Image (cartoon, rainbow, N blue to C red):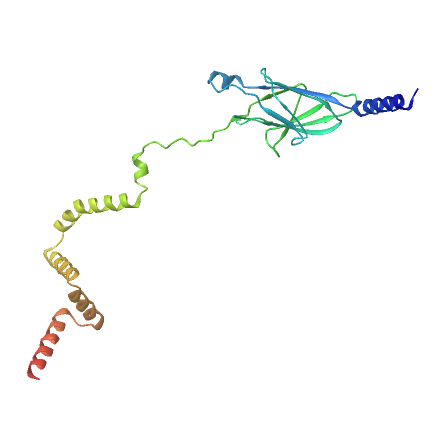
Length: 217
């Protein structure tokens, strides 16, 4: 046996040792019956990875997939589908044993064992668009401008009834207050009189006395 033939035998032996613990992972992607009856879009060719891209494959037309010559150890399977959400699967491969699989609905969720070959059902459908809100009159009440307008309209109907229930003296007093609001100087003089303790009549008399003094000077 030549040296070249010996090297080939050694390489084949090493390859055999390397693949002795290898296994094949198989599975299928499925839609639940409830989604099939709702005319949801069918499954397309989907990317499936092990260990975040260390091994990758695509699903076939029958939605099946397989990974060949996967070494022994713990592997994480992810389904990269843009339409439906699938669970994450953790797979443990031991020499001479069937792969042991654990399903997670999402990372960190409660685990549940599943059998091999894998049959993965969709958990939910992705919704990339928010539906446009419909018209609702109650939503208008959240607008401050609408609330102010409704309050003003309500006061237009309530004020005449309130004025009708007032005494003549109260009506006269309210009328004076409205006139003072139109004339800021009168309103300020009234406020100053209330602060100093003098009534409106005393304030008007003081003004007359001042005017007479100015005329004399």
